[in-house]
Structures are given as C-alpha cells and as structure tokens.
Image: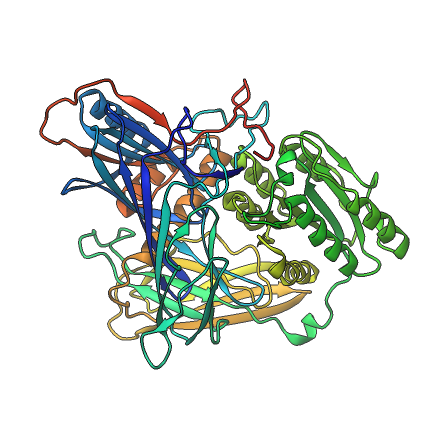
Length: 628
C-alpha cells in the first residue's frame, strides 16, 4: 500500500477529485507552481470534502481560488480563527465555501476543505505557490512536486496536540483515481543544459537560440502516485546573481510589497590554502531512524529498496570515508533509542569493522518515530575537546512534532552541526531541511540509489570543512536608499554552496544605480571577504515571486521567534498576521478563505462530510508508524 494525499473517504469510497493540472514557471533559482484540482460531487446530497496534502516546507502559498460553474471566487488571507468561523458560517447558511490552512504541527502539510458542493456539481480549485530550488551535489536544481504524504507519528506527551493533524489515506499502488498533467517553462540567465526527471518526460523544447528559455512536460497519462522530481541543469550554475524586483503598484510605499525587494544568490569562494588543510578532526554521531515505517519501500514500483536498506547503504559509505583519528558513534531510534557504543570511540580499523557488522544487522524494529528524546540525550553529553561534533540524521521524517524538534535543534546549534538525510519519497521537507538550516548543516533527499553516493559524499565534505564563524553582511547602497534585511542572519557557509539573501529597498537614488553586498567571515582563524555588486533598477514583470519568497522568509523567522518566546513577546503574532495578509502569503496564524454566495438559497439535504485523507489512528490520536 502507498500513502498518497486525499485519495479515499472514511468509507473507502473514491474521492471526488478527478484530475490535477500543474503549470510550473522557473526563473533561474526560483519557481512558481500553479496547480488546478478538479472535483465532482457524485453523491446524492451536498458534499464537504477534506483534502490533506504536502507542499515543500520552504514554499510560500500565495494564491487560492475556486470556480463553480462559470463563477470564480478568489480567496483572501485572514486570521486563521476568523477564517474558520467564516467557513463554518457559510456552510451552515447553505453557501459554498473553501478553506485552505497550514497544519498546526508542520508547515509542509496543508488541509483544503471544499464545502457544500451540490449533488452533481463540479468545482475547480486553483493553488499557487512559490519556492526556491535546492542545489544538488551534481549542481542540478531540484524541484519536487510531492504526491506522497507519509503519516506523521505523534509521540505521547508532545505538546503539539491533535488539532489540525495531517491524516493520510492509503490506496493500493496503481489505483490512484486521478491523473496528473504537468508542463514547465524554464527561463535562466545562463543556457539550459538539460532537464531530468524520475518520471517520463517529453523532449525538451528550446524557445530561443541562446537556449536560455525552454519548455518541458510530463509524458501523457502520468498517474500521480509518486513524487515528481525535476532536475534542471544550467551552464555556469555557480555564478552569483542578484534580482531586484519592482514594487507592487497598488501597495503603499514603505510597506514590504510597496518597495523593491532584492534576492541575492551568493556562492562563497574559500581561499585555496584553507581548503587544502581540511580538518580530519571531529566527533561524528550518526542518528538513524529505525521506526517501523522505515520498512516501507523508497518509492512505488517493482524492486524498490526499502528505506532502512537505503539508510544502511548511505551510512556504510559514510563510515568507510571518515578520516582516521576522528571519533564516532551510531544511535538508532524509534519509540526508544540505543547506541552502538556507550560513548564515542576513536575511528580505527577495529572500531570500523565492528560498526560495519552492526550496521549490516540493523533493522526497522524500534516502533514509532520519536526523535526528540535521542536528540535531548545527545545534547546533554559533553562535547570532546578539539573534536567538533557533527550530527548525521537519517529519517523518513514521519514525525508529528516537527516544530518542537526544530526549536530544540536551534537551541543547541552553537555546539552541534547537523547534516540531515530524508530517506524515501514523502519525507517531511519541513523536518529534513529545517533541522539542517537550524543546525548550520546541509540537507539531502535520498529517493533512489542513482544519486545517493554523490549526495552522501557532498555532506561529508561539508562536515569536514572548518566551521565559518563571525559572519557579517554589509550593504553598500546610495545614501538615499535604506536596506531592511528580510532573511535571518547568515549562520552557515560552505564552499561553493549557495546562500540566499532577501532585503527590502526603501527610497530611490538620484544618481548611483549600483549597490553591493559584502560578506565577511572567519575561516580557520583567517579573515575572508566576498562581494557581489548589483543594479538597483528593478526588473519588471517578475510576478512578485521575489517579494513573496522574501515575505515567507521573514514570516518563518517571526514564527520561530514567537515559539521561542512562547507567545510572551507582544506583537510578534500580530506582525506575522499583518505581513501574511499584506503579502498574500500563508502562515501558521492565517488561512485562505473563499465563499461563493450563489443565488442565496440554502442547499437542500443533509451535508455529507468526506474525510478524504485518512489512515489507521491509534486510540490516543497518534498515527501508527508502520508500512501500510
């Protein structure tokens, strides 16, 4: 069985979702994804459908609309409780309504409520989001369209609660009742070399002789029963770039949407003499998910390796590649946790052979995915002198208390870097990417054997690089222009790995049209400086993509601040709500609401509720953690 999103009802009846059409617009390192979902009520009574689905954790949902018959209703962003009350009021008065909200536990899970569709009626729901494309070990840019939403195990005693939990349906492989069509338009300042995918593609179609614009589509008839991964390859990917996006004409100057926003893609270059003296020190802790769900296959299809097998292979490769003289240990976790060694041991042929034998015997036999306790144990242990501690986390990401985990990791980021590996399709991007981001490390997603080795070795190379400290960013702009950073301070830099910065530019220069940013830092006790110049004149017709990504970056930073303050710091939640409504970008405290008033007559008949995302749930509201 496979866990996909919103496929069956509680009575195991087919969902009224008929098809999904996706259009992707890629501009360099960012993408806008527009999805249209076609629903049909085949019941004899009015229908409410609940559809739970995944999105990339770093995505910014920026538009939501619904079309009933020939009438389109565009949703507006409101404070979440207000939006929920408006939705309930609309249904109780017989109106059609649509509600889109982020899960309380994880920002990569959304719930769409399609309310009060009359018998025989069709509805078309459109959703737009913008997202950054992650740079891969082979310099490809990765766009993943998640189809699979793994159940999120909710540990006992977690303060996440059960409200808004993501329930997930399970259907036999090959019986997904709807299809997916996908087309992508790719535009880049550098020539496009090729586009690859884990799914069959039609041939790449170049639109100009410079090969800087192209279109590509999924082959017809694709069943949306697995994640769709697009890998884009450009020439000269590692060139620093800057995009200045013009303000929204209707927005008030001085507001985020009413000023230009700049996005900088930085590729720090470390001095060669520093890189030649890569450290061979370190304490490497490999934290491996051994919960029951790790028995699941990596993806659909015959011959697919199970997740624990992939984790074992990746771990074996890393163990064999460690430098002599470092220290290491391996911790397996599920409902409990256990270590291979009572404490970290020095890396030698003897300890390596012992560890390799134990890894080969490792099974997914430790129950639920409770990652918080092993992390607390690791953080409570004193670090070894002159051996910087590096965590390597392997998991399918099936946890329900993502925000708790991220907050704990951030608290201990000063002494622990974390390199995370999402194993298999459906791994939580919010958890995998979030852990690496909060712990100044790097995230990888392992979905098959073909790209496992370069990804694993890239993370190890990063872990062996000395930690960059004392990072500062200085903006150099004309005196009439002021800069308001939207990104949190840079806390991690790796050789050749992209760092993105967003900033709001207020005011206009009467003379100079150029600005620059200087990044200074210390590496192996040596001062280093990198600079990037950019033109202040905004680019037109960019669809507000940069503004929305900048808004999402700021919103996520404020949400973390609000959790850290436990709501005690006044004004943070209100600022998030104001920014979310102004920018039209989703947040933890807001939701999209659309109400179609129709002819004003109440719908006749009892309203049926179809929970179209469902799985086996334990009596205490926790997801079972096993392969369905």
